[in-house]
Image: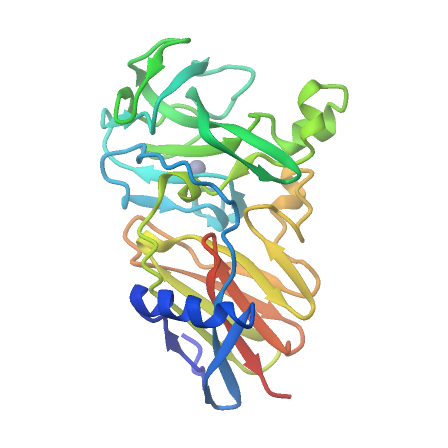
Length: 327
Ligand SMILES: [Zn+2]
């Protein structure tokens, strides 16, 4: 570990978060709490990244058995950075895979399919939303739950499924080195932004955004807000973020230099997989620490070539913290 004079703060309990949210509402953004070592630590409450009110269940029986979360990650199997557009749940071959809610099986792509060449046995379930909402200048009226690397199917195309229905079993088909479920939620369309860019005449190209969103927005998560943020002086200036396993929902980085939103991919070139997997953004480099099935926390390092005025980090619910640095 790097020795440093880091200011480290432990996120407050859920109860205090809610109290702060009320207190902060008046000034819109944040309220100063404490000062130490020339750093103001500020609790932040913004709106959620998606105004979704449709809730679904988990796709596996043990939803804390996660080996990769959504967003920036170090892809261990290929020794490179990779923007992961799903959550990986690990388990044993044959473990049940569950439908997250009422829906219809609309995609059935056995191993070797042209559409999902690396996904192995792939299943897609369409869920129409009881409460559509606005996002990316579109009405989001449906989501698609995408399941990869399955061992076997327990449903067929056009079947209707319900929350908790066993629809498949966990496996390691396709391009993977271990038994797990790669689970995605895609909003409104299954059509990735890369496909839309490469196929501008396609009807799905009119969406204009990458539909992969953080699955926790729909299937929940612990949302325990057990986070720690610290900083290390020097060049590059580093801010470190740690969150516990059930709370892997970091969503937005804000500084005076720029904003990067993981879920919307604003501040990120998401038009190709190559550009998405490049974590050097000029004014900041995001360095996710290796996360394993045994890791209790996830850590991101944010490296700034120059000391920023402030660094704010918020999750998909809009909860977060801001560190204000004196000159
Ligand atoms: Zn995955």
